[in-house]
Length: 137
Image 1 (cartoon, rainbow, N blue to C red):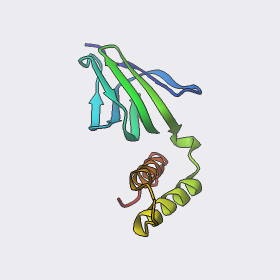
Image 2: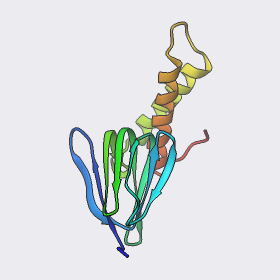
Image 3: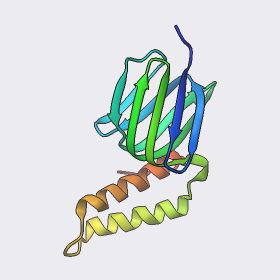
């Protein structure tokens, strides 16, 4: 049995990760999936959340939103619309975005796009969780 699986995470702008990992947790549009080496082939829509992966004894996190994930027995390829590694997340900006989204939902104005506000809130929560600052949902 293989001990690692190649993880590739890319956005339209750049390749964020290309390394062998022991396991990956991926948010899909229907919930999280866990992937180990030699996983069955799978194609899924990427959701909003925290992608986490284990290299050696270290767990790393990336906030992701939108895109697709392809799983093969030897490789996981994540093509994300937006992805931010935990070390690049501006926590103050994410907190401000969360506050704005919550305010829009708490006091919706006429014509407000509720679905867009909910997704903005979920993206901010994912960014904070990836940065190690989870918030109450």
